[in-house]
Image (cartoon, rainbow over all chains, first blue to last red; front, side):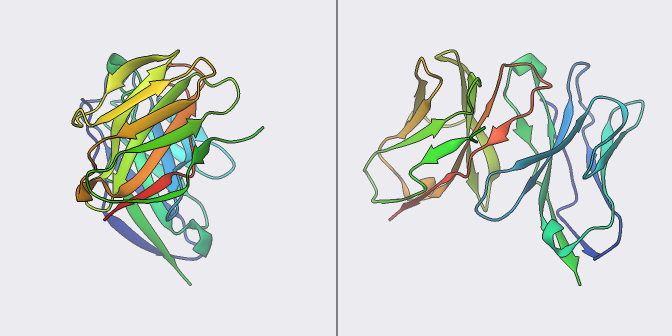
Length: 111
Length: 114
């Protein structure tokens, strides 16, 4: 199983760019990397997904190096409402949909 | 389109009782996965159903079971409740079982076992 490792917590200030890195040394060839955001007492919400290189959408960018053993979620100009837990998830294709969530990174955005 | 619906949203039970939780997926979604979330253990995969068949199961005791109906709605059941079963139970759905399919999570059912 491809396990993931993320920082437990991060602090940032409004307007700054935040980068959260996830390590997944045992990622399989067909695995995708997905990031989710979760607010208290709510289900996780999809942010971005990628396989290799760089993916960008309206809320974030995802950087994946060539060896795919890590990935970095980049949140531009964070606001207070970005305070949440961010999960890096590696899809376990060999195990069907047995997604393995990492411990998550608790991001606190300060004014 | 409507999102993932979970009922009930909150539930209080006592030890030894059993509980059934329901998840209605987004229209067209055939895969339903269940997760348990606790402060100590984080998000843990329970099981996944696709086309009424359980495809994968996490590392939980047999007291945790589930099923899926022909309309893709899913239920999970926990028998002989223990205090440690207090958690937020989340279901997530997607169209099929491809790894690149995004999961859409419901709001969860918060279960408190007294």
